[in-house]
Image (cartoon, rainbow, N blue to C red; front, side):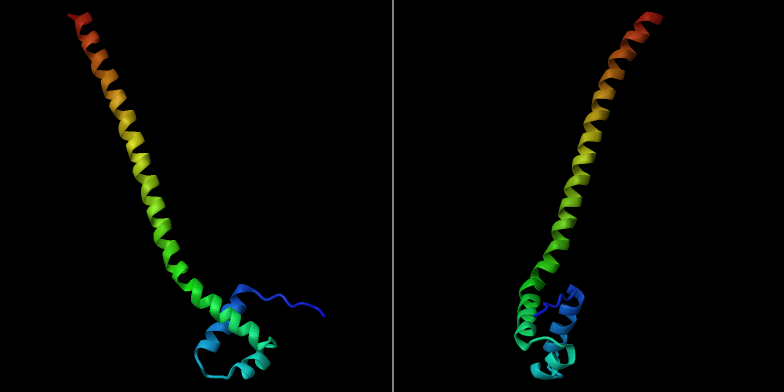
Length: 98
């Protein structure tokens, strides 16, 4: 027996079609050439994973914000060091010209 491999897009489409309740599971299985149990499993995975889909974006946005803040803090620290250096050298420079 040869195992068929289905793309994630195909699995999602079949699971969503099953959730619409327009066709019975037997009709869907015949239409797409997959076992009804497989369709039920795909639907369960889709339903269980739906929350993660929305959570990942928020997590990615938070990570991007943290990275941006860290970069700004590094830049501010670097500028503080440069300002201190320039202040010290400015005093030395003005003393020499007097």
